[in-house]
Amino acid sequence: MHKHSKSRSQNRGCRRLSYLELSELVLELATHKAIEGQNLIKGLVKTKYVPAIAECADNYKSVADAYRRDLSLLKHDQRLANYNVATASDGSNSCEKVLAAVHISISLTKPTRTTKKISIVLQ
Image 1 (cartoon, rainbow, N blue to C red):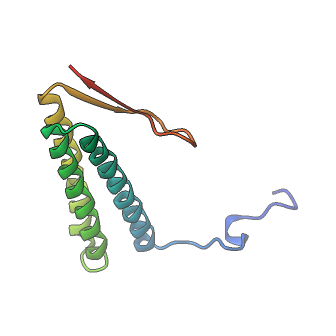
Image 2: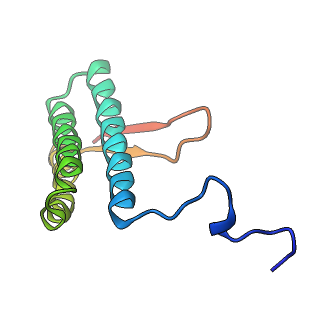
Image 3: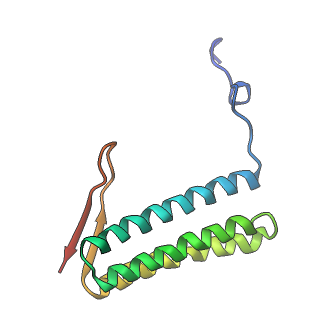
């Protein structure tokens, strides 16, 4: 090891996280991202109302709500929280199916620091 480098355990401000703490952080991030996705889709609905896109926004709300519930459940029943997290993605999968059924494709490109690019294709 280089004489000026420090191991992670020696870095100030760094500490080991327990499984529970790490799980909480991941669920908080997942909740934030689900809400972000929902808000993005709600913005599309405001631009031009399409029932399938509105349903998609509702599906994302269910995903965010599920992650919030799992966050509170995590301390009491980790197995159930783990199962619920695995099924929470059903809302986003439902969104894709609803949109595909009416020939709508929403493609989110990788955002840059200044933009989020959304492309909607009505076929």
